[in-house]
Image 1 (cartoon, rainbow, N blue to C red):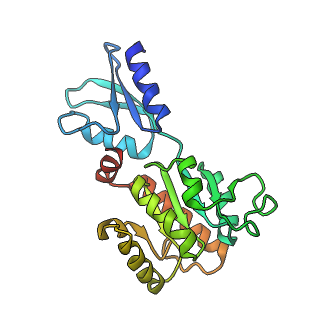
Image 2: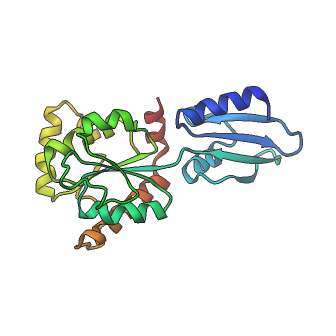
Length: 237
């Protein structure tokens, strides 16, 4: 690989930004496409957008008939769950099996114990203190699960500001209505609040904490694989 391309790729990877190395299989020439690039004039725009979403590498045929190989580099997707609750206990192992790095944040030390979350990255701090260290980004999902505005609201605000690919919050529609009022008072635009999945999780009739965890994880996977390119571009700006 050309040294300049390699250096540029390493910069993107270190910053948890996606990039694709496009290799012409006939000539061996390469170019780097960054997630934040304007793909409007790129002959591979559609397939590049799809590969950024899927994260899958592979051989494709360009419109001019040339065969190219797309080596896709996407950051590992993460889930940050706010609340060391029963749903989080079920969500953490399932999310890990699905390939997500998982972090649980909860300042309530009665809940955030290593015994309840063995092997999980557990942070017993307030979200506003912990999240700057975690570093939210467009490849992070945030699920607010405490039902406590003092804990959930700062995390939701930070997730929206960071352009996280998924932002969800536990609670009924009535609860979310009150949440919307609070977030509006904080100066968050209505279109941003609309990005919050609330009530959280796919509508599969989940009742128990493990079932709700399944619904949440499924919704996160759906958001990751089907996220609009426009959201990616806005978040990467």
